[in-house]
Image (cartoon, rainbow, N blue to C red; front, side, top):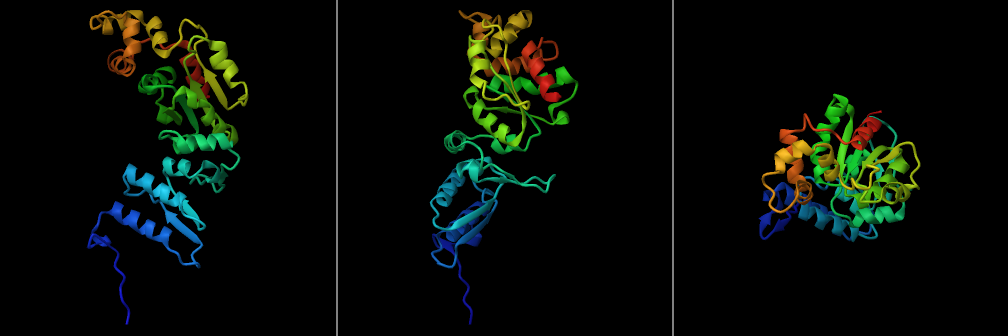
Length: 284
């Protein structure tokens, strides 16, 4: 005689729960098994059907699972980074060769374990990437690429990621190990030599480049856009400012200003020279 084992929660069969709850409970059950013969656990895409919150809970449970060895297949950046990039092996359908990230610096692996949600897998699997600092650059970049090259970013195989300027080096560490082609577009923050050249001297590979305006008076993306497009920006934002100048208004409302330029003036705006250079370099 055989008896079926039915897993229940609050007297409700797990089979009658949602797919996300089924995934979480079954994975948790496998991780908690104390059978001494179970030394290896295989998990296939545990992120499927899970909310962001439950995914973080699952990551913590996997982290706490010892001494079992856990193999996970995933398409999720959060799982890959929080469980340590140095232990990740990348597989791509276009190649039979695997890519190990074991040589990524320990400090970079720890950064991504604790950093806000990121786009590491998108970065690793993209043939060409533009890193930008903020929302304004990200909002306009696809249109600027099309203006400069005559092709869309997807047609050129270029992926745009907003990461924040302080994270550039972490992405460069990965690009250095995997020979990924990447360009960073950043503000000079009032000191081009210090912030855009001296800061990145350790990255002299041909596949990594940093572009910024060399004029320290043009310290941010918004200032560069304004100075190159005074008439357009005065027309768009002049009437709504109160005590601020148009330039200061754009600095106080970065994303909103970029979105309005995109919708109304992106076909006629002058593109700052350093951004044109960066786009042409990554296009190759």
